[in-house]
Image (cartoon, rainbow, N blue to C red; front, side, top):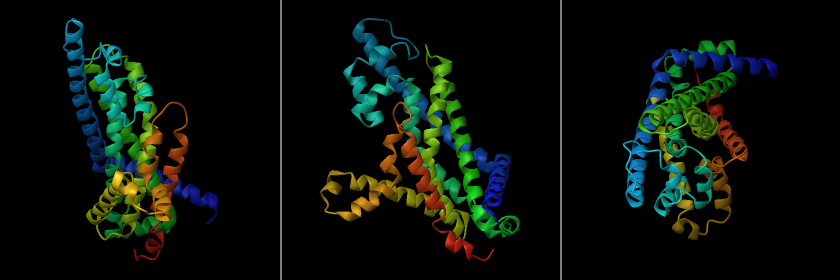
Amino acid sequence: MTFLTSLRDTAVVARFHLMRSLRTRSAVLLCLALTTVSTGGAWVFVQVLQQFESAAARALGVPVTTKPGAMYTVLQEREEFVNFMREVVNSADRVEWAFSLPFLSVTHFWLLLGTVPFLAAAAGAEVLAGDVKDRSLRYEVLRSGRLEVVMGRFLGQLLLVFVAVIVASVGTWTIAMTCMIHQDPVLQMSSLLALAPRLCAWSVPFLGVGVAFSQIAGTMNGARALAIGTTIVTFVAFGTLNSPWGRDLSLGFFRHVLEPLLPQEYMLDLWGPGSAWLLPAGLLLLLGLSASVATFPLFARRKL
């Protein structure tokens, strides 16, 4: 099989997997889960913003509005709101760009940073495990190849995650338009869509982990549990290494080897103006591809 033929087969598998997912409940459940998180989180942050604006209005002696949004620029000059935004974006250096974007675009991005990894890992675990168990995958393998099937389904599931992120963005946009005032609909939607590729890039390593376990697990539930568990371990490992206690540990070479392998090492670099986010996105893509083929030698010898 030539390289171009392999690429063509991978693209065909990806397209078939995406189309099949869109016709089944897996796509609906993924979109519904991510949209529920985004809209629920957006509504909560609207209530938080309302409290800040109400306090600012009373301090300035102006009428309190029933919906927030009118005093967003005023809040940017108040210390308590600036401190709140520093907590949201996890750094004082990232607040300036945050204030150039609509409020819900900022909260949407940081909320999904904590949600997408687990949903992507669970989605990746469904890619192969079910079809391996009922042995229907062997017919697809006969027409292309095992590597092409793995990469094609990985790519198809990644496209599905991107669709889910877009749908979730629409949910946040709806909350902004209905629960806030003085919001530019075009600016709100364009900012959400501009952040979607970054969130999609962030999902790739965890999706790759799910695909890796999907190749070797006996059941879909087992693959899902292993993928989500591994995702939790990466967050715990990153948090431990960056905690005061972790920094005091004399890990030496081990730290330099482990940290670049953790997706969280590149997470914060996805935030910021311009195209600087493309480099960490590329590294995340490399991690995801590496993770997805980590178990392929075992899958290649697995009886289908």
